[in-house]
Amino acid sequence: MLDAELIRRVRAWQATDPDPETRAELDALVAVGDEDGLRDRFDRRLEFGTAGLRAEMGAGPNRMNRVVVRRAATGLMRYLGDGRKVVVGYDARRKSDEFALETARVVAAAGGVAVLFPRPVPTPLVAFAVRLLGADAGVMCTASHNPPADNGFKVYLDDGAQIVPPVDRQIAAAIDEIAEGDGGGAPALLEVPGGDGAEDSRGIRQAGSDVVDAYVERAVSRLGAGPRQLSIVYTPLHGVGLDVTERVFAAAGFEPLHVVAAQAVPDPAFPTTPYPNPEEDGVLDLAYGQAEALGADLVLAHDPDADRLGVAVRGRDGLWRRLTGDQVGALLADYRLRRSNGGPGERLVVDTFVSSGLVARLAAAHGVHHVETLTGFKWLMRPVIAHPEWELVLAYEEALGYAVDGYLRDKDGIAAALAFAELAAELRAAGLTVWDRLEQLARRHGLFATATWSFRFTGYAARSRIDALMAALRSSPPARLGHHEVRRVEDLLAGGRLPPVDAVVLHLGGDARLIARPSGTEPKLKVYGRVCRAVGDTPSSLARAEADAARELESLHGAVSSYVDRTAHG
Image (cartoon, rainbow, N blue to C red):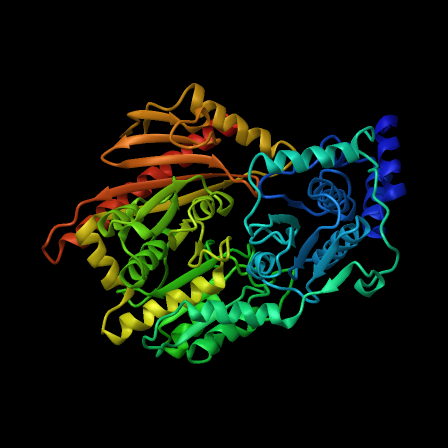
């Protein structure tokens, strides 16, 4: 027998839910008596944070749905005040268009103006449009690289950057006021105009093609006049990056991209890959096959909303290899530091506390400003906003996020792809490869070998299991991991060199380290490994350093996997 109070909340929610699909979902759960499924949806609410909202789609306050989106949009408008302009965009994920229209209608009903993109667009276009159009905020309906079942509600303010504390808490408080008294069930909804089309409200305007035109012009203007001869295989991974990416590459004078046909059309099911994330193993296999057949120079890949960039090149062994985010970051930083304008004290490089450390050394060698931040572009853009007098050379995080232009204050996979193609074309014209340049950097600054390992958790208790792992690392950290001695434990939740963050650093000696933190967007624990090696002058010294570093990272991976398994399941 289902709990009567739980059923009351379910029925109250259904009474105000405009979506027949999610109402039917609840009917089905009630019919089979699935109390766990119902409690998972109703015993908590999605928390609005610095990434906005992102979660699995479904019914109830603990899922992404039209009620939750409408509530979030209402809270945002209460925070902004009357008569505000909000840019609203969406990608091709399931229900993204519905969530965007709900958002636009709430903006209009609150007396504001919603500038709604008429079709799915990459996330960078929304961040760009906020500043271009002088908007007070922007909303992008996307779950970026998350699994197909997820969606999200991403918020920018008038500076074009993602929200940070205390703004997130203030918006969250406004959302909570709307939900007050409903017990986690039926929301107090703002009345919105009727009708299903954007044309039904005078407060909803359509974003024009001039936004895309301006974006393309800006991206191309950042390039130099170097060579453009390069054969590139490109995949949007069933997302929305293709049209704009093809436009910027054509405008820059590159050869037409060789697009992976099986992944060219937006498809929210992402049928050719289990995870639409170019970081994941196997995701680029179709692109590798096409690049091999064509004899291409470069593989470029975007995640479904085109804010992340994956890069692959042929290795010295002839096989296609995906570059790590740290390798791409180092190559972009090196290239742009050697070519960007401005004196040493007028330029800025930004990375995060989980970055490899090589970009910091590059910045020091060039005498430019370097700032280390928390992970996430909401933090990476703060130094850019704080110092408009400095030219941004690069902001990057190892999770394939890059910004090469301080005007657009979020990660931008499209402009980053263009910048990487420019550097790859120049290397090719000089008879060099990406690996040659990485070798030069390693010999001068040292070899920084990194790896990121994700430990996914599922089910109702997923988040609590991750929290328990982090608590164990703090209260009883391991003295050893395999044959590696843990020499020092740094709890970043205590604050200090960075704002407090839920992360633990295990210092292993010799500049080797492990950093553990929960993902901010998915139920998984992320662990970042780093080892450093000096590289001698002999031809074989780099190969020895690389082999030694690879063995140590593999050993660390095994030790960390065993620790996570024992702690989470033991």
